[in-house]
Image 1 (cartoon, rainbow, N blue to C red):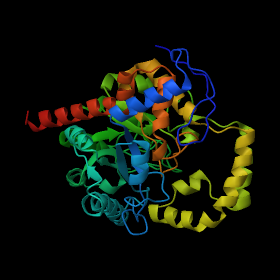
Image 2 (image 1 turned 90 degrees about the vertical axis):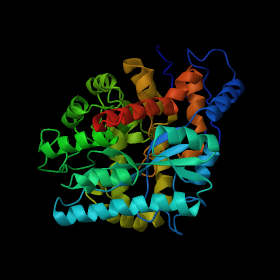
Image 3 (image 1 turned 135 degrees about the vertical axis):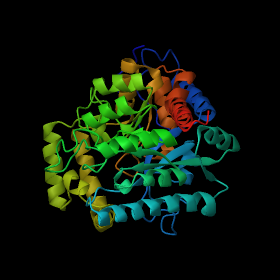
Image 4 (image 1 turned 30 degrees about the vertical axis):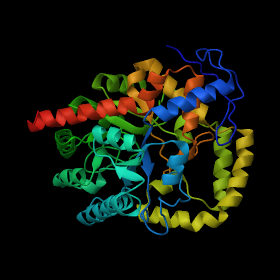
Length: 430
């Protein structure tokens, strides 16, 4: 069923209200009626975000997600926005592919696992719990607590040691993003570094072993950041549904990080899910004039471009971000001037990607994966406290409660249960 794709004007308020009328399928509901209906749905469904980044100092007195932080996601913001579950990503930036590099990557990943467990098990276990299975999700949701699930962004911490997949599973990892920016020993990235193009031709031989091991254990194969060839080969090889934990549709924004129609159609055949990202650069391609103005502004403030950031390790990126914090208020003020001339993508743009996927492959293969605290955040959905706005916009576009439940969590939980079923079958425990 086609959805209205008329862009709405968003008001940045605790509960945004569009100034446009209802979409073609939104009926004749008033704005108050839309909001009331959305509130009721939002409170009844399980809401889930499959990709939130955390730093190396997560779960410390300096970054206490129980008390509240400057990050886009913490427990108070989840509670305020009615966001039930986030997959926290143990992200490790691509570094040297050497024994020393792999050892450092492993320690970086383990540090984030320890932090997640520390928050959930020591710092505020009365408010949040780790979910390891779909059954856990339903049980914890019924208790009223928030939930963490765990993913690994970038298979780099696996190195060349297949046994690490089991170790990360035992610590709670339920998806592994095969690559990040730069190839690794598993597969080719959609953003390879100079000289790495087509290194493996998709999955390496070792990468195929990793995918099979993930299927055996019950870990989602995540293809966000993977090359076209890697994605298509993973879809062919995996016996279980795969996910793209934080991506968009290249049919609306033709950037390398998004999935094209061929990949989306293959994803449907696989039974997998694409979780739509809330990062503006993947939702809308800026006109050349804005890109030129942005480059000039970054040069004026001495800021690094995306390519330079991609080449940094996690520690280098955190040090850089701390160093530029004093100039950010002035930079943001100048950015607002650019936004007035060339509007940024917003929540309506994000929901256009949801519409696109639904129109192409159906309602059963799309969800939400913001990339909050990894670059994600758009007007109307800039942090976890604004999660209700998503439901409001879906109601406005004419989605039913059943469809909204599928988008927020039902599709992911259905695929997750199938991942578990395949693992049990492979292990002979069914």
